[in-house]
Length: 576
Image (cartoon, rainbow, N blue to C red):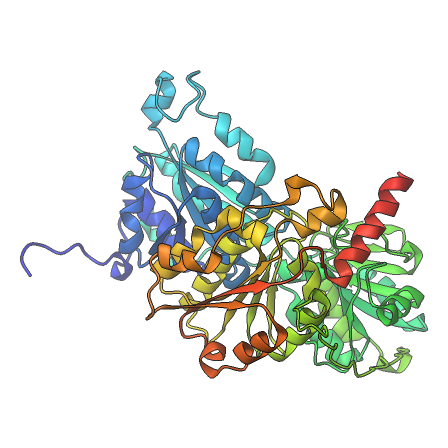
């Protein structure tokens, strides 16, 4: 090999100044990022050259929105992710995906390559601007959907800015925005800092305040006649599942999850009771949760779909709410007392002799019987898919039938469920599945990624399948073909034309997007027997290549939980 080789900056001692882009991408790698999503643009091209030098992989999506969805899915599996777009046109295309990450507490580092500091000072009339000389307008748009915005414009401050911003992303589990001007990418910054990792430990509670809150929590916990635990989304996002499982194992308290908390708790535990979502819950779950005289909720997100149209029938007088930034005991609010420290001390100090534990009455549910015609129905499919899932699977469900149907699927241990119940952007799941599958690959984990998405939602982001193929990812994709937006039909317009979609030959897309017989397999399933045979196939189960399934269900059919939630929401809307 002739010529000089570019030195591998991973082995440099970082005793000398380094380029800004090198510092930024090295820090990303140090905090766990291995692949960077995004699209190239002339304002970020110089920075992108540093990605492979910093031992990171570049993942170019088909558009910025899909890249943002993918970064969201990657972060949910990996812990944090990075997204690179270009100024104006690129970053604005990504904002819907970033906003979803913000709403659902997902840590995404959004890096925006922007015009040089000189161009900005001069107010030059550049492409990708609004033509008004205002270079802050797009950053201002991101202000409300990020927990930190930083503009890397002063070299002697840049290293500190990057470290601070990445810490905020991790601690708050929210997106951050980093503006990187073209003339700053190669500016020298303090390389010696890279010898020391960024301090990512979250702030500890003030000990006396924490002890007081723990005493109050234990007071009510010890005197309750039928206490239970309810786990929600922010328990996952703020990384306290370890503490929750310790608490469950020690106390043997009954534990339930919300739709957004699905997968947070090992569903094979004797104390696991099911999914609680107000009026849409199964009858035994509804009665058990709402009759409890003390509900210890962890990381609650009481949104409309997560509570089935705000149909909780629980009293705040019987509730203790643990959050990442505060604790609420009945009607008393304790700001600045986060859930990790409280949970740790409750586990340590709970007196099992004072605890009243009412066991879960498990009734072995029989498998639902299929339709006599052999048609695949929602109520049959979702419980049945429990038999197909394996330990450690990653299950991604789309807003709509899949999000609601998965409530009735029993998970094996360590299944990770990804859904976007709060933000609910249709099409999110396809990009998120790409990001999740890539994170699994980067972590060298032996896990399947399985996507359930409706045909209407799939049409919004179908192109991201091409990124999966190009990246050598092997998700199992079930496209539920039922002629349109079922969730919208049940909200309003059952027969309305605007809830219909064009008929696609969905499985042929994998060929259009570059799939071959070596790296993809495609199937069309219309009957129960065909589906059972497919799910029993050893090659299909092994998931050694991308597998794409057209799965046909009746147009007007919907999961039990979706129908119940739509009815509960209609009652709530009528009352207000």
